[in-house]
Image 1 (tube, rainbow, N blue to C red):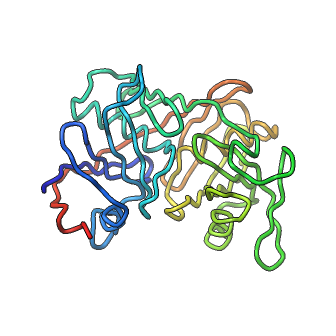
Image 2 (cartoon, rainbow, N blue to C red; image 1 turned 60 degrees about the horizontal axis):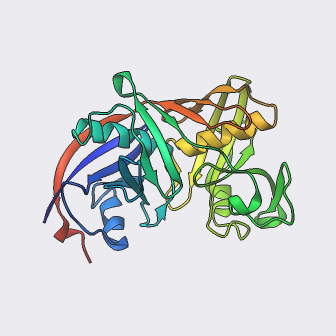
Length: 281
């Protein structure tokens, strides 16, 4: 069967977006993995699926699958692209929508030139909310790595779990070695996204993220939110901060006890049709 799709990205964090309201398809894990392959498929960090909502007061349901086929709760860059996609595909005329995710309702608002502002909800910090194994809540935690090394992290749930560590320089941080160890660490029963943040000043930080099920990406929206909130809680960052990732910059705003706001760009790359028979097992 032929399936229409759109390729999009938010700061280089790229997506295959499929409307499963006006068309029907079933995508299993192997099919998603094959579609994600950058040599033999479409290639993407995450697959985003638009479905009708099954909760009251939501405009759409939003499902997210990593390149390895695992389904995740939230994606900050993805929800911005999602908002632009449903508007461009004329699935809605609203510029502000309510979107059902596995992590709850998020509310993206489409602005000018493809920029989208998103209410990302309330951050969570308790170990059981991440989830993260700890005897009791602490401001920071030390986890054991290979070769008897330790890493100091903060843990934040922004609809999905994040471990944030502050580094002197993101360019020299050993993300390729440490990232996989943190992602699959035994203290994170559902794995975790590993963020490496460099504080430039109170209004500016740099970030690299090793995403669970994907690897290091050019940008991570929820990772930027988690890193900013972590820095704000620790007195390292102001309540409005620019987070610079390899693919570009996001504006993150948060005050204690309030929701997190994320603002950033989106881009549509191309549209196409594929025959799923070539990708199914």
